[in-house]
Length: 260
Image (cartoon, rainbow, N blue to C red; front, side, top):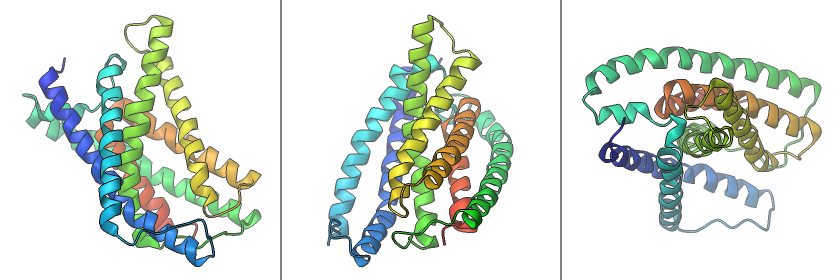
């Protein structure tokens, strides 16, 4: 059982990670706005000061990070999920956990690469049969490389630590169960993955019209990846889920880059 002192330390680390993740999104966000302006979108404004973007984004990241951490580590602590690697770092099991960590990371990383390549292949096949006209040019690979780290950190903290943990606890209370069963966790994984897909629809709309093809590919692709990330979070914890998510994004968007 983790002590309140170690839980607070763990929370602080996760909040700092979240703030860093939100700040890493600034280059991609600014580049996307610049491309939209070049494409003639009069509704988009690009701040002249990067400093103001950093301040605003940092404050936003701090507030949202604190909320997600509170939901994931305190409100949803009965879900028995969370960030075991960070928690153990502040406990007497630090050395043993560090050795075990790399072993628990190996297979999820391998699965992540294989999954990214498989979805990349399917995506390219779909594009050949159902071509989609772009609305605006996409940011180049370096911007996708940076935002891969941003998405891996922030999305796992929001969707897995926050939302998935909360869903599992709510179902537990509804079913009056002390410990979450695998079926309860899987319901949480699937619901969270569906929400994960819905949130990505506005991002897809930035680059292409929302048609049956684009909506289906976005929803199905994110349902598969979101379920995988949820499974990793359940079995390996937050840090492994973040790393696996980052690697998936790097393979899919930077190595493969189906959109470029």
